[in-house]
Length: 321
Figure 1 (cartoon, one colour):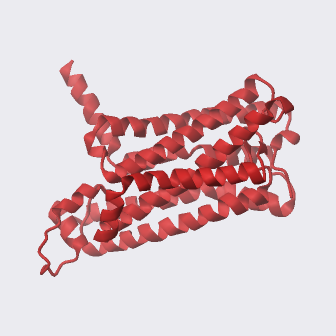
Figure 2 (tube, one colour):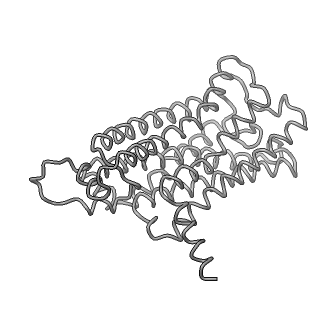
Figure 3 (tube, one colour):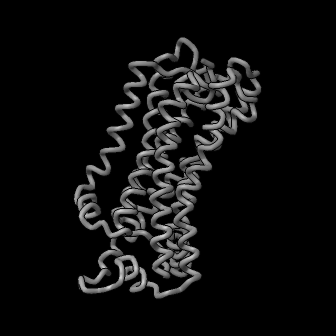
């Protein structure tokens, strides 16, 4: 079982470079997550049920980025987090890493499930989810804290370079990466189903907010499907819009998949070969894990019309002056 701690084989210069890179990427992720949170606070149209779940993801992304930022900063300006004097700090840092890395998975899964239930017109299930928003919020926290606590008690966390985590690649692969890919393929299936559902309706829509369901007529004698009624009532039959939104829908799982492909490949390589990946590859591996907050800000910001709202707000402020 190989230790993936690159500091065991890296030079002081490489260790310094690794931590500097992680600090930069952590700041990008923190700023991206903070933008999503600020958007939720600034615009009432971004406070729907679905956006409340996106807010939960952003808070998780922010906490994870700050955790990486702190551990990398300690490495740069003090003794290594793997030193005997920082055992307790390393354990806490590893616990926080495990909690928030796992938690982002369950936020993304929750968002995908609720989006599917709402747009596929599973009224009973979607109504239950919206009536129990606290449950939807608490579940990712409970699951991730339980997993993080079990990891701390049963295995423990050690220095893997820029932060602390499970030292064993095989353990990380088993506990984190295999469940993560199950989640990825689940959300891919859900969004693919919605893709074909909306494509079949021959219309388009620009957001996935649950308020759109209020436009559905209550006439049960209608021969059209709920999806047909929903999108036709709002956007007509614009094929160009349809194609654009259909593509946007698939961006969510594809970006998440791309983000975790390199880290998963490195875990498999190191756990099966018994060798540590080259320094540059290892740095890219860790950067992919840390970049989630920034990636989520880009994906959700573009698909939820967040950038348009900010541009309008800036333009209005400029006109007032």
